[in-house]
Length: 187
Image (cartoon, rainbow, N blue to C red):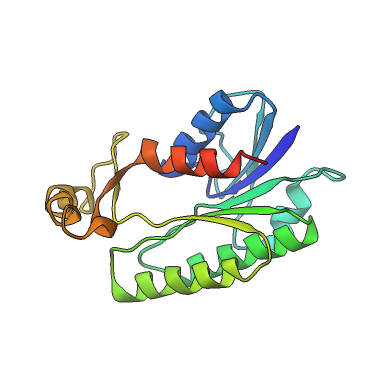
């Protein structure tokens, strides 16, 4: 059995990641941490945990005891509140250390306000120093799957720029989830 914790797992990327991983790995069991605690993916192998991902003590108290976790994924991404991103990353590392979790997944971001990009880059560097396998996906804009906001409107321009500057190429939510699943499910 592979037990996976996903912080922010009821969000846009989390729903797609969980659905793909369920299809890919019949041994995977998920513990989805979200503020609502409402399961976005209905499956007996998906367990919803109502907790703020930034409060490691509450998350810890809601996780099953005596369970070995193989992976933790931080999908918390807030363009307007950098403290949320930093606190979720701290929770990720604290849980990884407490439970000796060997793999960490993280979605960074290379487009957005300078403070957001700097914060995500700093978190990535910090995670990579954790002596664990760290898989980082660093998209410009994630689109598809029904997303329709201001960032999605930039997809055509970023696609054109992406042919010259590949790191700016927008990525579908399917592609981002697929990359995480393939990289994190290899152990």
